[in-house]
Length: 191
Ligand SMILES: C[S@@+](CC[C@H](N)C(=O)[O-])C[C@H]1O[C@@H](n2cnc3c(N)ncnc32)[C@H](O)[C@@H]1O
Image (tube, rainbow, N blue to C red; front, side, top):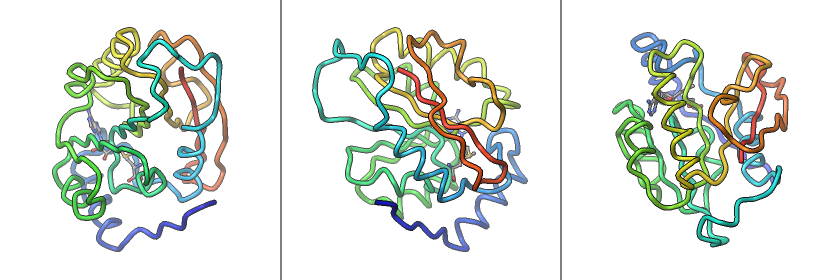
């Protein structure tokens, strides 16, 4: 079932204002569309390759969203144990008000991934194209995967190439192309 998520005027304004101040960190002029948010949440349940069974075996999934921004995708991740890792304090304020049951951490995804010890499924919107920290973010993702912390990762890209090809995942697939987003986006799953 598709949940409807209408972003508030406050969320739109915060997003645009933060984009003007930190364009390479925010990475987009507007938050993602409802269609992309729903597709990302579906992708989290999309089976690709061999699911890793060596990572604790629990069917309970600890979902971690990296770079949730205004929480557009978060709205579709409800009902699961949820941690939101966001570097921008203005977005963290919005997220804390909106998602009272989620654990909102105001920190860099790099620091989070390097400290995390138990298995997680990751949804990430962190822009990598012009991000000055892209290399560190990819290295931390690769390290967490090899350490057995990342069980599955879902992300999106605007270009046709796999954005995390260099991180050492055993399986990768482009599972959707969402035209109803500005610009249209590809949804990727890594295991
Ligand atoms: C494209 S925006 C997220 C859009 C979000 N899906 C939405 O619709 O509101 C990217 C987000 O990643 C966050 N971000 C960028 N670098 C980060 C990092 N190193 N750690 C955590 N968050 C980061 C930005 O602050 C921004 O909120």
